[in-house]
Image (cartoon, rainbow, N blue to C red):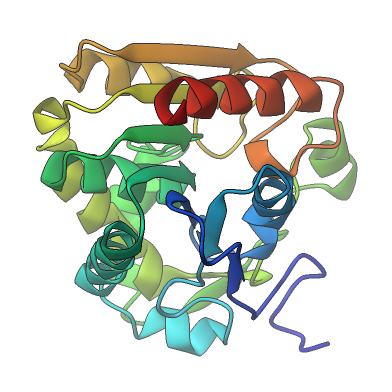
Length: 259
């Protein structure tokens, strides 16, 4: 395995039940890959839905690719993907995690989606100063930093921090993500679709206060939330006690829209 990727990495795109008219479009998180949403994709495919999960531009390849990607490429990729889903399906629900959760909300601000499930969405960073000030300068000189460099291994284990996709943070791409979340935040009030927000109180990547930030900006009349306490940031890849609670809530939300 390449030194630049973790053991939670998947270069493949997935499409299940291509002839179903009920579609689920899954979006993974920043510097991650379809590995992050594959468990949920398989779970939903067993219910007969058409399920699609693609690696975003600059993801599922190399950290250098990620660093050369601009945020509008992520926006364009998901806009194209959901448009293709609607050309083939009668109803479509978009499900995202982390940056994918932000992108799912972006799609809802553009299209009258049948439903949105956004988990661990990040509009406020854990270290705002580093991301918004320091990295804007230093990403021009230092392109990556190891994901584990700022953590003691025992602390990582204790706080349920798992690293997906690349094992380095692509700092140029992180600067693009900063631009993207600020752009998307401006349009959250345009969302009219039913929305389910999922967030963990122990999320070490997207602080829990992000849930309140999103709720404050949303104007949709159909908003539901699920707060969990065992699973960390990677909501859809949980192996914790609340995994069944998460999947049951997602199943219920989808069933109420599709049936």
